[in-house]
Image 1 (cartoon, rainbow, N blue to C red):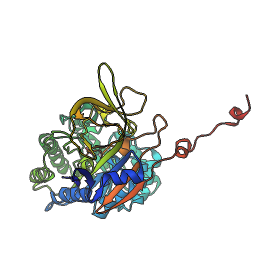
Image 2 (image 1 turned 30 degrees about the vertical axis):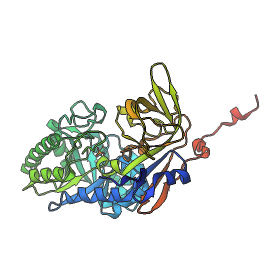
Image 3 (image 1 turned 180 degrees about the vertical axis):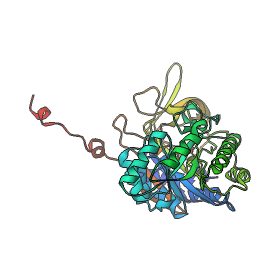
Image 4 (image 1 turned 60 degrees about the vertical axis):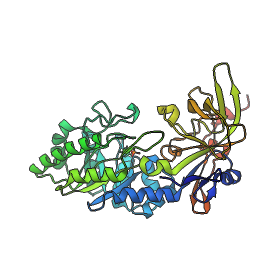
Amino acid sequence: MHHFHYVNGELYCEDVPVALIAEKAGTPFYLYSHATLSHHYRIFDAAFAGFPHLVCFAVKANSNLAILRTLIALGAGVDIVSGGELYRSLQAGVDPMKVVYSGVGKNEAEIRQALRAGILMFNIESSQELAEISRLAGRLRTTARIALRINPDIDPQTHPYISTGLKKNKFGIDIERALQDYRRARELPHLDVVGAACHIGSQITELRPFLEAVGRLKSLIRELAKEGIAIRFLDLGGGLGITYDRETPPHPQEYGQALVKELQGLDVTLILEPGRVLVGNAGILVTRVHYTKDTEAKHFIIVDAGMNDLARPSLYGSYHALHPVVERPRPEVEASLVGPICESGDFLAKDRLMPAFTPGELVAVMSAGAYGFSMSSNYNSRPRVAEILVKDTEFYVIRKRETYRHLIQGEAIPDFLKEAP
Ligand SMILES: *Cc1c(COP(=O)(O)O)cnc(C)c1O
């Protein structure tokens, strides 16, 4: 469900014509619908009604302050993976007791920052990290609440780059050694062992892998209880997939009900870390066609957004639907929609049937709200694009387009290079 729709052949975001925004803001830009985002959050949260739970939005999916603020205002917490994400989340007004901190490589400064902020829980990914957090908590004369992130060795049947719960992945602690690490955590000073966590991957379109993970964590929690280690928070991570093309992921309600059913009788607060499912279809990337070009082999449509703006197609071969911002009768062509970047991997769509877009017109690259702007870069010295949020009949620039000044910010030419040749 989303609020991007056609009115008399013109694409609107809520009650604002997309073409009007393009005229005022220039292209390319990311465009988000406040109503869609709010709706997605409410549906997701409601799916767990009746079971104690906390929805912690995965900030890496979209870290814009206004997006974070929208979700936080609705009651969301956050799942962070860096000090920068903690900083953003606090700026957006998150309650530190609704922050969980994941990631395999938390550094000393980041751990201190999170301890000072008083976050809910560190999800720990190795026994060395366990010792480090214990040490730093001691230094700051505080106690760190921790969960161990378990690698349950489950195949989520998704792209290998976004599978995270398999033995061969770098994430989490092997489930076989979890007991041993929990015993160690209990012995270490300045740690309060409160949770068990897992996150098995992203863009998962079936329930089975989630249920398998819950099953394994449930048994672990029972074993821990026998040893007197009481788990109060069960964090099941994120990963629920969305429809980009023809995928048929479970509805959040179905997902919630299935998980809650599996957890009956367990005395824990459930934590969920959804990213993509909340923001993916709440955002699009709007780009303008520069040129079209026919080579002997192919038809290319060259647009002003590139892989630096939306990396997913080149990184994972991901599919994004393409729609004209202004509809008109036209043939479909087999083409590649490519950007201006000097890389052959620079495409938003490759060898696909698509409307025969023509120079000057606007193209909506759909389902770009998650891992879109947040993965963008300045490659080829391209200023990062603007982000715009629509609410009802109004639109708001929530991140200005960067300028050339941003590109060289912080760079310096040392004196020895300044001397005239
Ligand atoms: C990326 C990530 C998420 C969010 O994943 P989605 O597929 O966007 O829901 C949640 N938890 C952790 C630990 C992550 O790394």
